[in-house]
Length: 151
Image 1 (tube, rainbow, N blue to C red):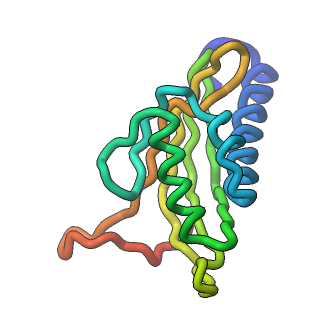
Image 2: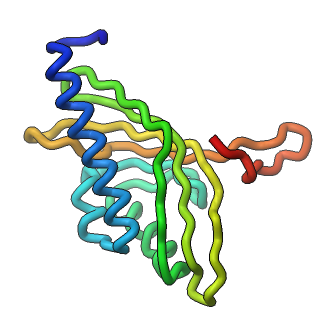
């Protein structure tokens, strides 16, 4: 692995980041906005699947999750094929995410897989999400998102 530090240090940092993201998944399933807020830098920048193009700050990021929680009676979230790269006090992780669950009106939705990328910063010894981006591939011919792909 490139960068500074030993292989053990990198493995420890990767495990901490995986733990942070696993905690994010747990917070989503519990619909716990406070637990989510503690995982983000105060000035997080988010490129989410819904408008606008950019959400800035933890309050804006939490507004997205509030809308999800209002629409879903039960929320599930899954991260798959997560890869983490760490170098000093910055890191990034990428993989695939899927939001699914039961909507308020009772219908179950399997959700769709999206590409998820997280930019992380270690501040005061703790890893926090400084940037996240979620994207959906699109069909060049139609310009429409392709939502039926599976990793």
